[in-house]
Structures are given as structure tokens and as C-alpha cells.
Image 1 (tube, rainbow, N blue to C red):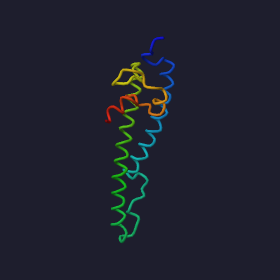
Image 2 (spheres, one colour):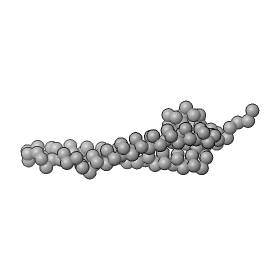
Image 3 (cartoon, rainbow, N blue to C red):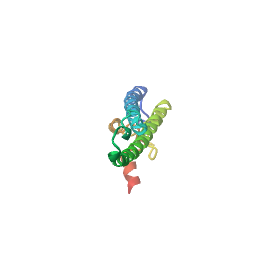
Length: 126
């Protein structure tokens, strides 16, 4: 029995649907974070009394910094998902970049942008 070297077109379409769904959610989450940073909801310290303004501005700044970090992580996640879509187009999706073997479907369903099999990832962490 020969070993599979890549996923079939039907299997790739299944993964494409999973990634597309994750991308849509990731973009929605990114937009929420972006609006929190830009304060588009208008809920700022300008509508409070001057006594509390200093404290609220400090908390607001911290909150915006945290949202900025989360937005950066979310954008990185989006880029990984987009790269996975390119690998689907190239029919190289699901192939471990270290071993050249197929990454198990269960792993790809859980982490659709994975480029390493569990074994290769564990070896890299040692």
C-alpha cells in the first residue's frame, strides 16, 4: 500500500471551508479590537468630570495598549490562515515542512494553519 503524499482535492476543500470560517471570525474579532483602540464607540473620558479624568485616562491607555497587543496577535493569526489558503491553492497544504509527511487531519482540524506535525514540533521544542 502506498503512502499518501498529499491530501485529495475533496479533503483540501474541507480544510478550505474550515479556514474560511476561521478567517471570517478572525476578521470580525480584529475589527472589534481595532474599534476599541480607535475608540469609535465614543465612550471616552471627555464625558466625565475632571476629578476622575486622570484615573480614567490611565486605565483607558492601558486598555488600548492591551487591545493593541491583541490586535497584533490577531493579525498574525489572520496572516497564518491566509498562508494556509495559499498552501491549499498550491496543493501543499497539510505537508509537514520538517518531515515532508502528511500532518494528521485531526491536528489540521484543530490548528488549520499548522505547518508542523506533532513529532516535528516536539523535536523543535527540545
